[in-house]
Length: 340
Image (tube, rainbow, N blue to C red; front, side, top):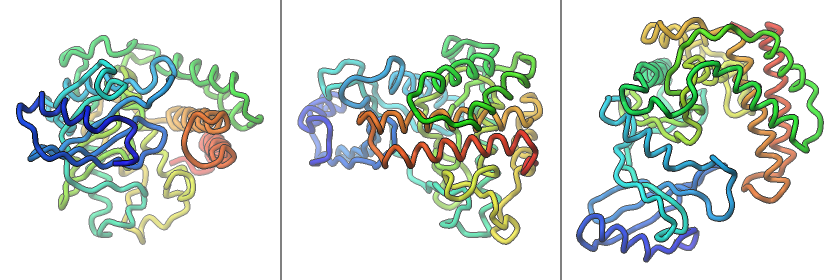
């Protein structure tokens, strides 16, 4: 337990108070990227996951574990596949930061969109299961589950383009002309707001779900840190980036032989989602370009934090290179080089 960023005895006492009896406790830190510190916690017969804020100063609104827990609490009774929430503790008196506990869900996680660790015969079905889970999440009406005030409804893309453009403009990173061009294209080609509002996950992708151990079915959607009220096509466009990014660009499948690997093409994935959630409207070049723009700026921000010494990970140059590659992919989508 040497890699913990909190006092294990304090957690032991907290769990004894919650469960009513002292039991054997085991803690294992889960390797994570830039997100909230996450741990497997076993306490007697209870198998849980603990997520907490990082220690030290954090940006306002970042690492909002209270929002994550609120989403789990709202969605769990609906049948949308999320872990069962157990307890949220908002004070810093126990672990030094707010934290929450949820049940640990067993299953399979695939970080590579080509699914090399899956049986080839199951790969298309796994992607269809991912589409089904996203459609189920978007079908939930936020105001009916207590999430009507979880974000600002309406004009989602206009506000998001302004937000991420501002972050890019304020970044000390080296210039990325492709990112400037992509931002300008998005501002000039933004569709009229169609009023669609759903719970937007913000990071919905193959690597952020757990599949059933033997079935191509999502049993848990993870990492709700960026969730808010938004447009369903923002999540769909982001998930579709798998077909517009290369294997060394966050595990995409661009350039791979989809037929030989028994992977669906983008159209088949989008069609499956639309069959379950036809009200979302058509996925267009704009939505995919926006997803690449946003993802590029996110990696700019990570590079900036690495350079400043406030984020873990590889060197800033690596992250900055990925930001530029994603911006280039965005302009390729805009110019129809591999749009589908």
